[in-house]
Image (cartoon, rainbow, N blue to C red; front, side, top):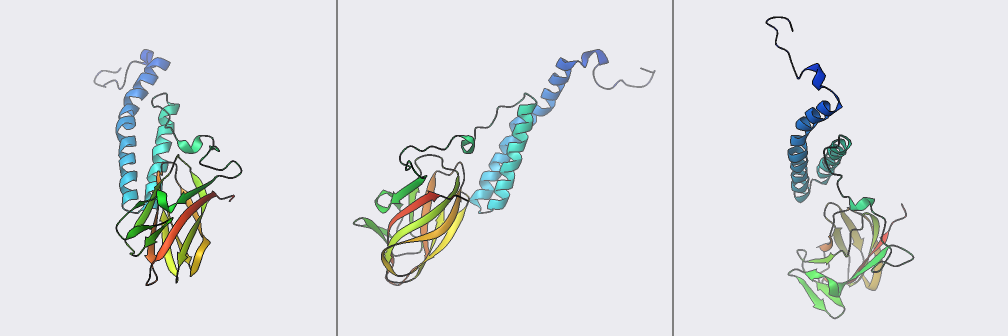
Amino acid sequence: PAQGVAELGPPRAQLGRGGLRATLRGLLEPLNRNYVAALKKVERELALAGDYESAIAARNERRLVAEILVAANIGEPESDPSEEPAVADPPFSETARTLTLTASEATLTEGATPAGSSVAVGDTDATLTWKLPEPMPGGFDVSVTYSSGGDASLWVRERFFRLKGEIGAGESATVKLGTLKITADADAITLQAIELPPEGLHIESVTLTESPE
């Protein structure tokens, strides 16, 4: 180089394929270790705070960065249960991806009391929670079988998303509440009554059926 002018970067002879790859690895490895881990932490914190839209945006960016790192031969592909083949073995039926969660299988909080084959719900703070037997990402129609002397409103939620549905008076009635999106890393479903008739209600089961939409 000309006198008094510093030469930037390694000599041209070193900038072969191996030299470029080593340089790129040195630049991107901190991104692999720090940025992806930070995005995962942000995603979890946003989800816990109920900001599901931002949590999903953080997840999408994390996956995009991971793909870039893999393309540069610097990272390992993220395992994503949503890319695995759908499992049609029990506890799902063979003809449709359907899972029925009975009240007797639920974990209960205060205000929810076992009552034979059902659970009596007498408090809007009470919840019934079921562990999912395996990852089951996708949209699922949610139906609840219940007995109630009056109208009630229910939440059904997974890790990120939730569904609000209305039910009326009925005896061992089954009502479709709507469609709930279940994410790949959701491991449980929770039901909570947010409005109850004076005498409460009885939950018998919740059924998840994969939506064709």
